[in-house]
Amino acid sequence: NAGVTQTPKFQVLKTGQSMTLQCAQDMNHNSMYWYRQDPGMGLRLIYYSASEGTTDKGEVPNGYNVSRLNKREFSLRLESAAPSQTSVYFCASSFDRASNYGYTFGSGTRLTVV
Amino acid sequence: AQKITQTQPGMFVQEKEAVTLDCTYDTSDQSYGLFWYKQPSSGEMIFLIYQGSYDEQNATEGRYSLNFQKARKSANLVISASQLGDSAMYFCAMREAYNNNDMRFGAGTRLTVKP
Image 1 (cartoon, rainbow over the protein chains, first blue to last red):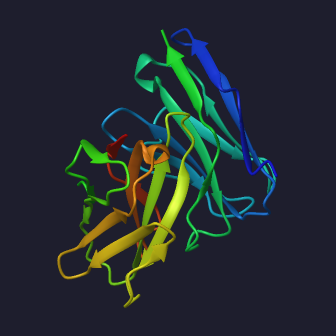
Image 2: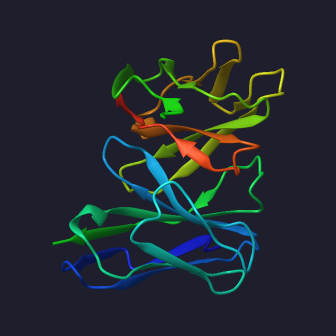
């Protein structure tokens, strides 16, 4: 029972480099999310996908793009990484956006931009 | 504007004792949900408990209960009979039904259980 799988777990980028964080869920969930976690700030929503084929901006979308490739997969792309994007990134999923069961989170990606 | 406030950056509790982690929230919506998550040192986020704004009873899940005081806009997490494995960061979160359903998180409280 994999749940939500994120890759990679760790990544170091140089300023200006690009990369894509991958996320896949096997729970047949409709909604998927990308959060970033910074010290003292909790988690902040970057982008979400309420259902396959739709994506929308969250609280902190600048510098990121997303793709809902299919129902299972939701990727986050940094086109030109900046030191301010150093953070821990979490992918999450839920049956729908109004679910009472909370979100299922991946194990996180620790990204450092130097 | 900060919608979720956790005023305790760190808390200590003796093993086997109960502990309350505070959470207050701000919303003008009538329909919303409140959540608590646990983040151990390994980093994963674990969903603990949910309380709906229309639920009259406080939510309970095993040793976790949510002390919901709607008029005060507080949703405190109570952990009974603390165990060493309860040492972790705890996050309160809220989702408003009419605000795009975005889930917003507080800054977290680090709980340390002493043997």
